[in-house]
Image (cartoon, rainbow over all chains, first blue to last red; front, side, top):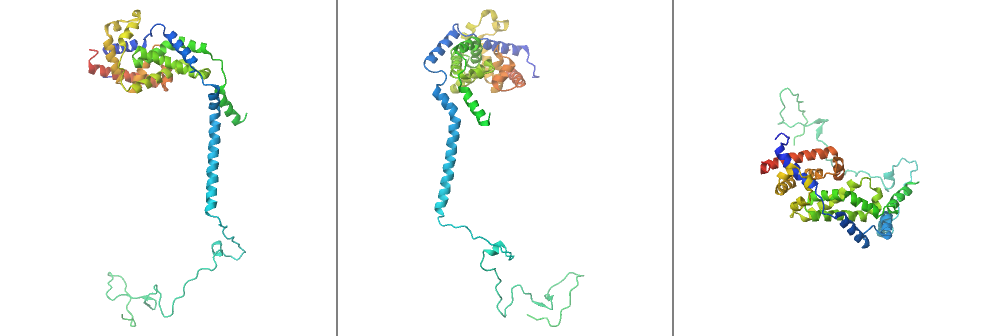
Length: 159
Length: 190
């Protein structure tokens, strides 16, 4: 099959299509159509009446008005519902900055946060056990060859 | 004219009375009924159903007669209506045409128009070929069937099916090629 249709296959196709495409209706066809149209017109099948025409013209505007009303009802209802759930709510305190340098966040708090003082005689968790500012090295610690290791001092506490 | 007034005029215009009368519809019937019958017959392949479809088409025209003045190409518009009607009927039937009326069709064909091929190939063979056309993909089948209607040009078929002329030509080509393959398989042409 190379896309070319040989005569043997195209001839019957053409004949069948020609037969379909040249079909002729029974005599009096137009008369029957006109009769049916006249009958339909008499039964009121024709164009829509003035009332339905008016509805067709007014339908977009009516839809717009309905949609607007619906939106207004939804907004009003939600606002009223919100006010009913928070009847005594007042506005947040007004922050007055008087050039004191206090930030807005601090101004609304009565006292600035302060750290808790450490009890006497205790050490903080972060205090290191060091001697003269030098880190204690475990005796069993081994360093790789070539790494300098400070000599242990005499007053290293043993624990 | 403001935007709102323009929209209002657009809404009101279709409702305004126009000068289209029943004589216009009668003229449409006289000019296009045979072509519409052929379009319908290409799908239904039944004279009575095709005639019903054409009558239904003009009933719809009557229903929308206030819009007739807006139609630019009556032939394409009417073909589109009858095409939708017959396809809708066919979809409802859910089956291929059960009562192909080829014998009746052969009877109403004017004998003087018969060519040598028509004389050789019987109406049964026509029926078999048309059933093979029914097995083609929808778009190709529709283009091929509408191309069979004598009164329709490629441009009008394209307008009725909502596509381009080149697309229609391509569909017809593919349809004929596919049909040729089917015919060889069926051995109808041999």
